[in-house]
Image 1 (cartoon, rainbow, N blue to C red):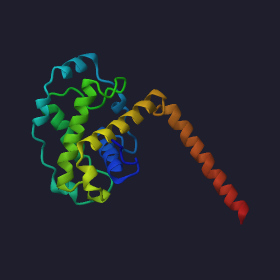
Image 2 (image 1 turned 180 degrees about the vertical axis):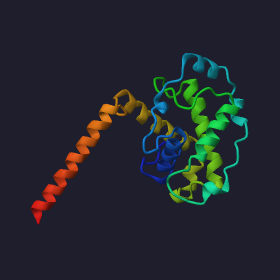
Image 3 (image 1 turned 45 degrees about the vertical axis):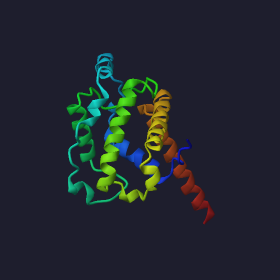
Length: 188
C-alpha cells in the first residue's frame, strides 16, 4: 500500500488531531506525551480485551464545530481521556521506546482512530477538504498514524524535543531572520 504524501489533507488532519489529543499543539506543550508508560501500566494494558474499544464515546458538543479550522478545540482531548478512563486503559500516550506493533501502541492507535471515526462524520474535519476514499480507508489511516508515530519516535530518540535543542533552534531561527533583514537592507 502506498500512503498519501505527508502534506495531503488527510495526513495533515490526522497529525493535527493526534497533536490535539496529546496536547502537542499548545503554545507551551507539556512533555507528558513523551513519558513512557510504566511497566505495571504495560502489564495492565496487555490484559485488556479489544472489546474495550466498543465503549461508546461522549457526543461532541455542537459548540466544538462552530469554528472550522485546522486546529481542534480541547474538548476532543477531554472526550478522548474520558474514553480511555471508561475503558480502563492506563495511559494517554504511546510507548515511544517500544516498536509500533507492540500491544500498547496497537491498542492506543485503535483509540486514536476510534475518535477520528467519531469526529469525521460529525463534521470536525471539514476545514481539511479531504478525499473521502482516503479518509475512510482503515489501512491508509493506520499507515498515516504509524508514519507519524515513527517520526516522533525518531525525534525523541535524537533529542529534538529537549529544552537545549529547542533553545538552539530558536537561536538559529533568530540568526537567520537577522541575516535576511541585513541582506534585504543591503539590496536597497
